[in-house]
Length: 147
Image 1: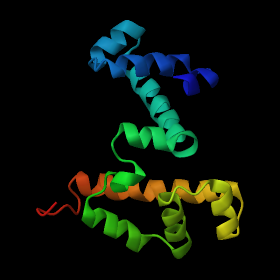
Image 2: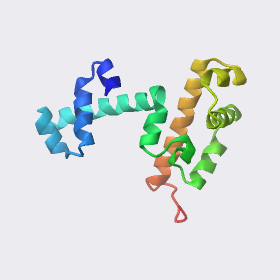
Image 3: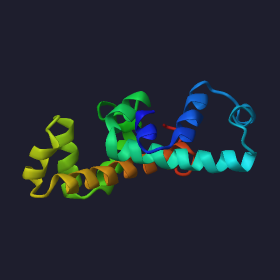
């Protein structure tokens, strides 16, 4: 909420509060006095900010909340976790291992020979790859019966 309010996204914060109450779309539209089209647009803006927050600012918080944090292999099945490790490059693999050890970003940057900003960008890319694998396989494309 604070993240949204700091970015003058009060309407997104209000939408989020209503979503947390698990209200149906029609009720959210009524409370916020929105048309279905306006609600769809607000939902897309909210999703944009949620992704930015999750990838850039407090990924640990979001992943813990979703029970998809690093300790749980980002919520991936063993097969999906193996696929992620096959898809990432050696530097991302080293980044993953260092993050698993709880090494601070500054020390990771020194170890990898890059800047903290580059570490953060690589981490965001790695998280996106994990999300893509989880969402593609969970949604049915490529899922197998042994999962």
